[in-house]
Amino acid sequence: MPNYRRLPVPGATWFFTVNLAQRGGTALTDNLDLLREAYRVTAAEHPIRCDAMVVLPDHIHAVWTLPPGDADFSRRWQKIKARFTHATGLRGIQSRSMVAKREAGLWQRRFWDHLIRSPEEERRAIAHCLADPVRHGLVTLAEDWPFSTIHRDLRLAASAPPGVKGAA
Image (tube, rainbow, N blue to C red):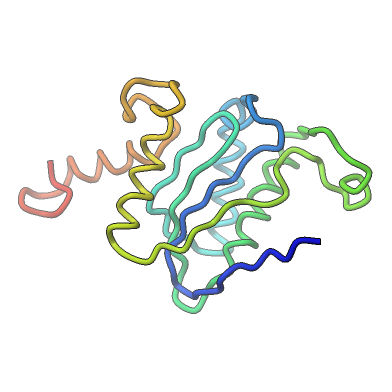
């Protein structure tokens, strides 16, 4: 059995990729309201500063910063995935092991995480998140993808006073 080790760094910033088990589907964008609710409820229980997030049809990229003293991003993803799965009732292909563990088979069991170690690395991770719909050929411009925090960031930049970082 593989030994998956995650580096527990309280209050750190992380880059994540979370995939559905079956690539090529549209379950996430088709059920975006349920995904947003799963995220909202989880973030209310376990605070998250979402620096960037993009939802594509079959995967999610996110850059999160956790509160000081907290390194449990795995629990947050577990709850988001479980709540979304329960709310949608969707199922994937289930192995005997998945059935025994009461897994729906909708999501990949694991997710990819990367500890952000510098402001430049954080900038690149955020840029990767926001540009992913363009890389996948879903839109020509990142701001044309509706399921992204780029819209929040553009609103904040537009409302910032002149001379303030992020101002238009």
